[in-house]
Amino acid sequence: MLRFDRHAESLDETAVIARDLAIVLRAGDVVRLEGDLGAGKTTFVRSLAAALGIGPGAVSSPTFVLVNEYANPTDRPDLVHLDCYRMGGGDELDDLGWDRIVGSGAIVAVEWPERIEGSLPDDAARVRISHTGETARGFEFLVPASWDERPGIGGLEARTATTCPRTGVRVEADSPSWPFADERARLADLHGWLTEKHVISRAVEERDLDEGVD
Image 1: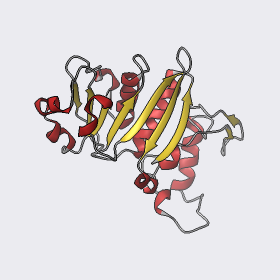
Image 2: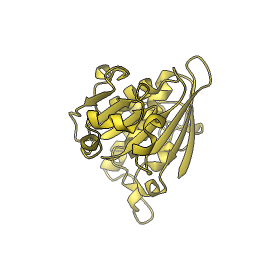
Image 3: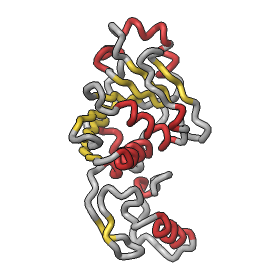
Image 4: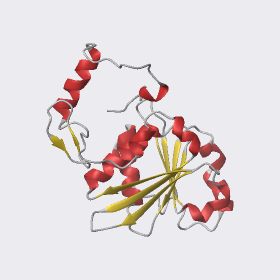
């Protein structure tokens, strides 16, 4: 497994981290969401849904209904969100249509995955969320080694402050527009690529083709 550690001081920074994960996720992936009560697992799913193109306002905790399914209006996969806190074991998954869910091509996010341990695939990704402050959270990602070949995997690595390549100003690690100073600088850089003002001085590799990466 590959491990990545991230930290967020606010909900906005949590949304950035969720976006970085969404870029890497593919149809059929199962994500274990681990953490104490109130750690922010459902909040993270809401941010993940927004990053996938699903309206975050539609996302609610499935504590009582056990499973919520969200159709994606974009060409990204649908999202299925399970809360297994009240489940006594994997046997109860049959009533939820578990085989259909994992075979649907949707991204499946599972809260309290330890309640259905034996039913989860061995290659399920893990996101461990821990309290580090009132709105601050620590995120530990454990993902299959095979994900190392996926475009965007480097985006899960912890960021450091940098200098905007367009404006030359300092950009903090938690900036939503990182590594650019703002959206205007990002679009200006993109324009440079589209008009072929920028070139790559080496052979293009598969990981350079990070579809959807800002």
